[in-house]
Length: 173
Image (cartoon, rainbow, N blue to C red):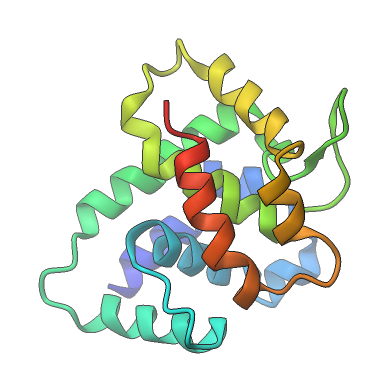
C-alpha cells in the first residue's frame, strides 16, 4: 500500500502540475496534496473534524480497508493529472487573471480544479474536449462561490464543505 501511494506521489503529471518549491517538496507537501485529493475526490468530507484529523482518518482507512479500490482510484488520479498537465502544466493551480495563469500554487485551486475535474472526467471526450475544461478553469476564478470560499482569511475547514460540492457540480458537462 505504501508503494501504491508512493507511485502516485511520484507521478510525473501530478508533480508537474503542482509547481511547488523545493522546500515544500522537502516538507512532503505533495504527499499531503495526494492524500487531500484522494480524500476529497473519493470520500465524504467530515466537517465536524479538523482537516488534519479528517486526512488522518482517510489515510488509516486506505491502509486498513480490505476492499479499497486501489485500481479505480489510481486510474482516476492518473487521468485527472494527465489531462491537467496536458492542458495547463505547471499553471494548473494558479489563478487566472484574465489573460494568463499567474502567481503561486493555490490550495483552493487544487481542491476545486483537481477534485471537480476528477468527479466528471469520464463524461468528457478527451483530449478533444480539453478546450471546454480550459474555459471552465479560466472562469472558475469569476465564480462567486470560489471567491467567497478561497479569499484571504478562509481556512480549509470552512472552505472545503462549500468548495468541493460546488466544484464537482461546476465541472459537470
